[in-house]
Length: 276
Image 1 (spheres, rainbow, N blue to C red):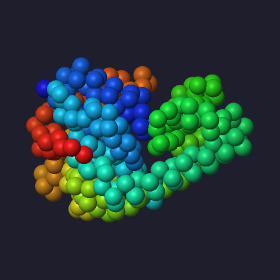
Image 2 (image 1 turned 90 degrees about the horizontal axis):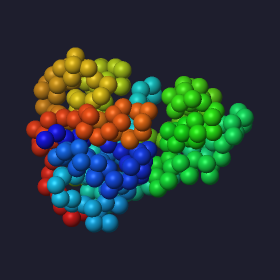
Image 3 (image 1 turned 180 degrees about the vertical axis):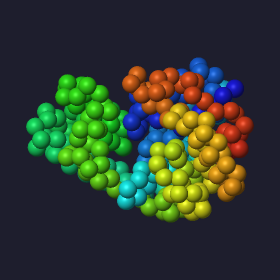
């Protein structure tokens, strides 16, 4: 059976509720999954508090995807097997959430000043249960209103770093993220290293306390997988991988089970489900 250790729910920028995601993963024949919402663990909390975790027929790894601070590159760090109720983790996530809301308000204001018909209520309707409001939610509103043909076009025109309506993201430093994940009993793993666009930075991160690297990813080709597998072997890191599933028809993969990894990699990361 295959596995997928990178996916998102409505509690960040995914389309499916956590229980819908679990059901879809079961239907796709997945054995191990990790829910890794952006800067929040509320999706996992929702599963647990509503009796969906642990779940029969599938192993769920409590996870998260942190955005790390870097002056020029996008660095994301996954945390697997975390205690979602750990006090230090919860306190830091509250800080990040508050900063996300401030950023979201500032971006909406900038867009309005540039003549776009958008307000905070529009974005909150699209975001639904998510407290991790992101540029993707804002972009989807602008597409819905006919301002742009696609989310990608919104980013390219106004929301990418350096564009007119971009607002810097409050992010924790790499070292702090790694420490928080470990304090919460988890395993810090470098997400989609190719998207950093600088393998020297990737190698430096491998030496900073990261315990795994996402070798398998939809945007990694065979040469990338071979290169990052070699890094994993060089630094004694766990091998991870996943689809980065969000559930939207414009973003690959559009369905769970399309991009998977072999169970043997997930088995090395998985720890038996516990009462959170």
